[in-house]
Image (cartoon, rainbow, N blue to C red; front, side, top):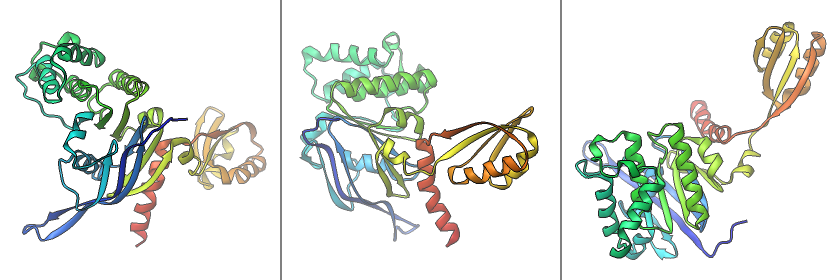
Length: 317
């Protein structure tokens, strides 16, 4: 159980609308009134498809854009308090750095901007580079680095000043599987040090592995928030049925089961509520049942259920 002193982020009715159209006479609601709380010491995942409003939320929290309504507090301070910025680390989704600089020079620059003590600056820069596995490339110009390496440098600049709150917008973007694993390990390390991590991602398996809680956003509207295990219990369960005898495939397929045959062995996945009907069909077709196994729901299942419900409603309308 997390020991918390205060919410790291408190959002109350925060919203953002943009002017669109040729004459700018139309309003598009990029973020509908959002109320959300992130506890101190949490790893909090912010999930949603492209255009859901995730980046808009982060920009509002950082003061990069101004809200159309609502309020927010960060680390107990008002959103407009400039002093709170020194306690925040931020990685944008597509960071842009001066490409003639080296990682060492870039991090030294950000450390200066963040007010790192001059006596501690070199150690802070070296430590940040080491944590993202970029020590060997510290003197290489950024323009010569791959996208994945630039992403690592971006994460390093977000933590070089030892912030209390780290905001990461798609931190796994551009990373290979090994790089993603290293970033996951780093996020866990930062959290163990007491930092609060708030990150957006479309890689749901990473969120499921890392997060204490997640929120799902779609079209600027909050669709669900909670502990991952609690959210997964809301998803309709499925079961895998394995049997011998290909003759029963058509009967199970008619029930909506997803069947896959390997020789005489057939595996089918279907909703748990249809299990009894499936077993009856197997008996009628004289199939030999081998195994019935519950299929554990994933965060992807929950995500698709929430986003899919809205799409189904749109089609029906």
